[in-house]
Image (cartoon, one colour):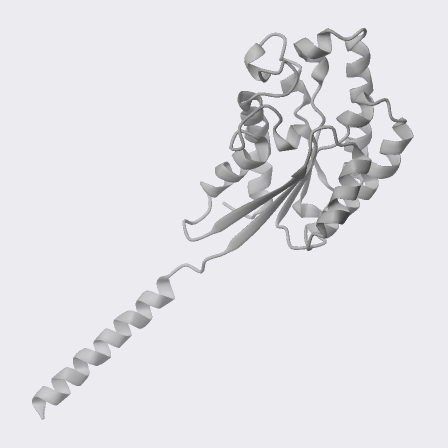
Length: 233
């Protein structure tokens, strides 16, 4: 009888230990990050892990519990204008399930000499779409400024590099003003790319797009804000 009582007591302790262990196990979470844009988002002429969305994902992951997952989806292509991005998003038929959405678009509107009024019309539409995809929460959205390709060898070979900079300033000013009017975070990285002539390491081997180093500097600015979006201490 004593042996039976002793075995029952051991079984009770074993079950109690398992229960306590289960209670202390962290709950695994899955976060989703959506990056919308063009060549600057897809990372033209750099490796897949070098582009800024993946670098940002890797940096964020370091601050998350090991049980958590962070998935990144990129909807971007070299040469895309605001019109192309709108069409691509519609084609993707994305769900409104993203914990973070970044939007960087407009350089090809400028480069392809599209009317500025087109950007004034379509950028707000894209930003509203970004909000919708970010679970309808504008606090989960980040607008990234357009890099200035005038400060690359390619840009310097154009007839008027200063005009490129002036036009991109107009694009960025509009994007910043509109984003901030809605209470959406706008992060300026344009000044980083304007060091491209002084520091060639910021320019990719195609003499036009940002390098892995430039994207790392983008992420250094974006990371503290992105951590706030994820509510990570």
